[in-house]
Structures are given as structure tokens and as C-alpha cells.
Image (cartoon, rainbow, N blue to C red; front, side, top):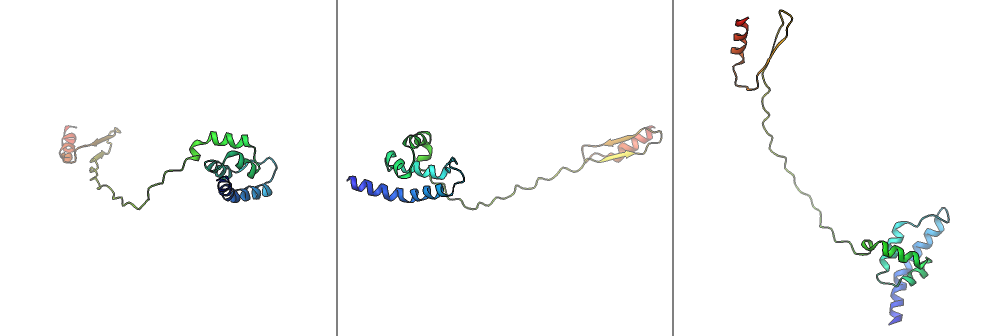
Length: 137
């Protein structure tokens, strides 16, 4: 049974070990941080393979792998499948009738005083109001 576990672990670790080696060869400095995707894959494997074996095969410190596994329990859990997204037709709301502009009258100033009348009700007889106003002068 131990041979089955080791064979499975080796099969799971081989591609990841290759990715780690490639990253190590192409990094700019010796102390460059390891890319998060590599850490995430190593942490995901900790569910199937013992941490000591991961650390040994990937040339990592066991304590670092343990810390990462303890710090990221949410990353280890499998993400829930997202619902299939489809196109949804959105119909625009009905166009509300705009209120008619309030009638506005600007009377030319004869004495310099400006007179402006604005009626908020469009049905209001504004012409009668202007006549009444001018007759009172």
C-alpha cells in the first residue's frame, strides 16, 4: 500500500517539481518571491500527499509549506462550481412622459424692472394673466 501512495505522490508531484525547477532557473535574483500559483498548487497537493514529501520533492522547507497550508485553508478547499452564465435580455423601462415645460413669459422692461412669470400648470391661462397684469399697470 505504501508503494501505491508513493507512486501516486510521485505522479502528482512530478509536473509541479518541473515547474518549480523551471522557475528557479529563470528567476532574476536568488531571493525573488515564489509565484503564488506555484504555492497554490503545492498547498492543493497537501490534501493528497504528506507535507514532508512535498517539501522534499520541491526542495522547500517543511515549515514554510506547513505555514502556507495553515494560512490558506480557503485556498485548499475546492471552489464551488459557478453557475453557467448565459445572455439575459434586458428590456428598457417604459419611457415616462416628460412633464411639459412650464410656460414662461419674460416681459420687456419699460421702467428697468424685470418681470418674469412662470406657470407650473400647463393648462393655466397664462395669456389671461399677462393681460390682467398689464391692464393693472
